[in-house]
Image 1 (cartoon, rainbow, N blue to C red):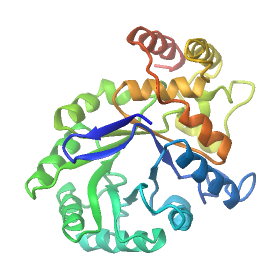
Image 2: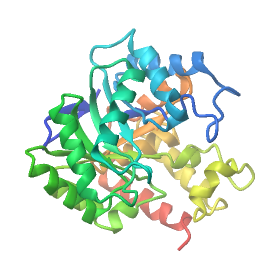
Image 3: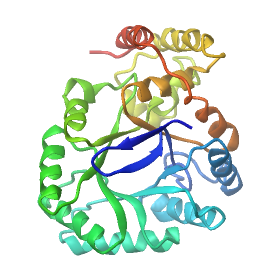
Image 4: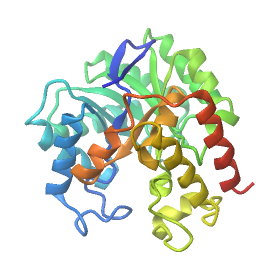
Length: 312
């Protein structure tokens, strides 16, 4: 399995991870209907077998159920697994101690003495950025996490948080952001360049645009409303042309699927994609995105077609 290193934090992890939002989440993903505990357990085992040992969860995923399920599975495979979770700064959480208490609760659900990476889920008001940066530093000092990161932070807040942590002698390890062929906002805002400059690793969530880049959806077979809301700018009539291009490029690499090529594009950008897997089949297919690399020309070709799919 290809591996990448976060220069500023000295963390080594697989080039791709597994996002476990769908594990236990009934509202968005329908956990308990078409899939359940046995399915996600099989996804966990298949991911490890394929070399994917980085799992990203959060306290709000399934209202804690995602962490509990992952914790149960981890009891069988404790060693060599990289676990990340997140703190959501709800407006009633006003003090650094709220983060520490939330982290301790996450650790109880996970059955771990510490996580490898703890992140601020969103830069949510009203608490200033400084407060949560200090709380992250405290979490490291207490030995509750190896490294700290943020999520959904823009260039300015990333830079500010990086400096605040540096003042405490702690590097900002990562920024988890939405990034895919259908959402290249982090490039246009300069966020990717900022993270590269600061040595902050970019973790890309929704790298398959919630399934739009797999060929599963089209104007005739639309995504569920809970997912489509996030992609109002996507022209579903033009989406099949992009999926076809992804499949065509994949033929040169041993008949890679559209989804595998889309994930490899994210990796080629220097980011670590985390993609969901509800079962073993999905987990195994996701792993096929690593071990090979798109050429610069192929990436540009896909970007040009993707640009025609996104409405201005």
